[in-house]
Amino acid sequence: MGIEVRNINKHFGSFTALDNVSLNFPAGELTALLGPSGCGKTTLLRIIAGLERPDSGQVLLDNEDASDRHVRERQVGFVFQHYALFKHMSVFENIAFGLRVKPRKERLPEQKIREKVTRLLELVQLDWLADRYPPQLSGGQRQRIALARALAVEPRVLLLDEPFGALDAKVRKELRRWLRRLHDELHVTSIFVTHDQEEALEVADQIVVMNKVRVEQIGAPDEVYNHPASPFVYGFLGNVNLFHGRVHEGVLEADGISFAAPDHAAARDATGVGFVRPHDIEIDRYTPDAEGIVVKLKRSHAIGPLAQLELERDDNAELIEAVISNERYGQLGLKEGDVLVVRPKRLRIFVDEAV
Image (cartoon, rainbow, N blue to C red; front, side, top):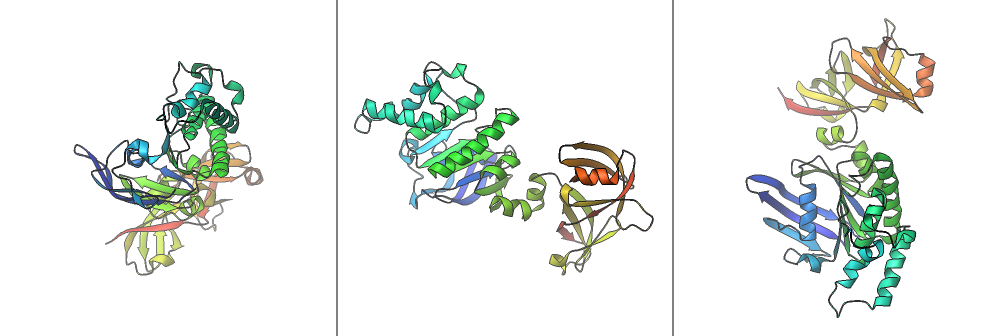
């Protein structure tokens, strides 16, 4: 089922939670709502579910206006960060709950309910825990049971509000891979709220980046990461180095280096910023004729395949972060205090304003 929201506005007193948000969530895809706390992600999810009413705007489910439909009529499955399982019920009974509280005319026979719950337990790979109770499970197991319970009522839409946020990093990584495999099997239209950039990039078909109650960018993970639409998106999706300077007729002059800025050929003495990812920084040992920014190696962390470097500029500007292969790190024979030269291999330039 496709989902669309049109011109959604929501206020809580004087606080604006959503400001004229319009989005389309393709049928059968997993979309991540990504952004910092307070940007409106969860409010939008609750409005789609019917748990909150917008002040204005529409929610459309399969092109039909569902704005006035009760949450029960929207056929939405909701998975929260903190599981919300019934502690006094077994795992089996937790999953069966939604099926057993349906109106009598819609309720499946008991044998069908048992078969369905057993299939769901097998799907989430926890059939061996059917008789356990939530307090006896790990956090990751509880979250998989919560997801199975949401799927039991065969929702047309699955909404997940930071479902792995309360778990440790290793379990979170395992579960998001599992969620991606599960989604590829079921193809339920799903919306996934997170503030974890890596999580969104790894799991989603489509990413919606939100900031200050508005949408900054929509696109596939590689598109959003490699072609950020704004300085906010660039900075939010991973570490970034900033090079401040002036843009004039297609050239950024920053830190004594000239960078081509063909997209800004019309700029005349405008303030601009070059954004460079740490892995797009080229490093060499300093020589008097070397071109680039002179830096000193302040700190290095070379464990595993990559070496992370913190580099101090001569002009005492903010540190430059660089990532190089451990092989290259060994070739250069680097140690803290070494004087080096760095050059951005690829950067994205944003012009702020003309002066």
